Amino acid sequence: MFESLHLTPFSAALIFFVVVVCGHGYRKTWKADPPAPRSRLWLYGVPAAIGLLVLAFLPLRP
Image (tube, rainbow, N blue to C red):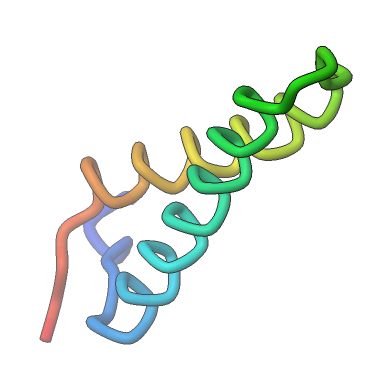
């Protein structure tokens, strides 16, 4: 059933780029002087976490 799930090099690079952008946004929001709204932290954190899990558990096929 899940044998057909895999990442191409392009899709893995795209997911990695999104993870880096979301991680940077999360850190920038976390370090903001006035306390940032928690919804913005969730907005950056959830896609970064999902992207890292996808990259960690789906195999890469050339």
